[in-house]
Length: 406
Image (cartoon, rainbow, N blue to C red; front, side):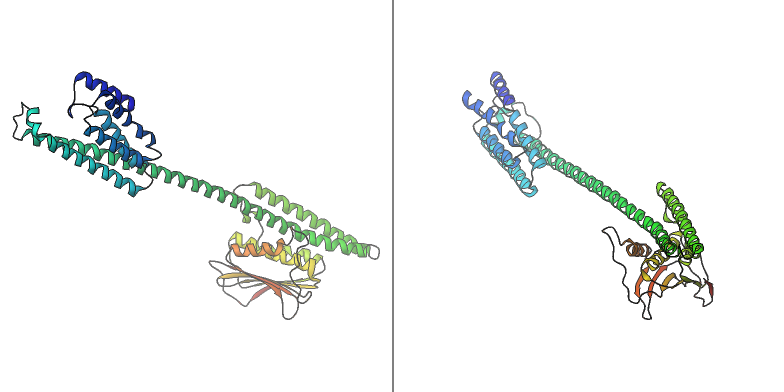
């Protein structure tokens, strides 16, 4: 801008155009031309200082009758716009811009008052209904009003646009982080689900196989027939475990799979108990109330609770009898497993850093369906696991029961 101002000084002197009066010396004119563009260097980093200094230079140059007006006006416009667009303190920016505009109009009034005596001679051909002085004053006020108002509003608009763009970028970044967190949470939940399924499928059958293998070892020499029966049970449990693992892995490979797709539910509880019977436990299985359709996920969760409770009984309880009850109540279905094992035993502690998934898995399954879980010793001896799952509709709490006794 300083270069353009220097060119404007040369052109004004060459044309003899001195609208403000006799100009100062050439060195002074060139000095004002250079100074008027320098403050724009800081229009982005320090727009407040840049605007205030440039306004002072602009008025001082006009007081000294510098002939360069065009480029000086453009630099003042850029400074006001930059302050509105980049000023960090919005209140201070507004005050400085308003102060500069008021100062410019005050200087305009002073300059008009000083030149009123010679105003008539500057318009020898004026013949309108308004005096040349008044017409020139109105024209100057309207032009400067549009000039400063445009710089003020455009600066504000640029600031608003930049602020909205920044907010959009912040929101987009927040959305990206939220998606990443949701994806990570989904992966974690899927890992937990897979771990829970593996535990439920493997632990039960492996526990039964361990009991049967131990029984086979003890009677191998005394009663080969019983040993063969126990080994057959081990073989069957192994096959069942492999089949369940294959089915589960097939479901997990399917992106749209859900727990219910595994095909297990409360109606398969009786077949689940066969392993406990083969292990030598006296198992009593009772269904209370009228069975009603329940969501597949709830049915699977109830099945897994029974499976895990039976696994803990076989592994830790030293029990001789197990009582499994399913109650279909008005608004919930209840699953209860009790045994006559060691009185007051606690839930077995994990044997390794990765152990202890059984009770955690039961609690997670029950909590996922807004149910409740009770685990602990019975007053009369033994241990009880009781889970309740709310259902939308259910049968009446009929006292009649279907009993299947081993």
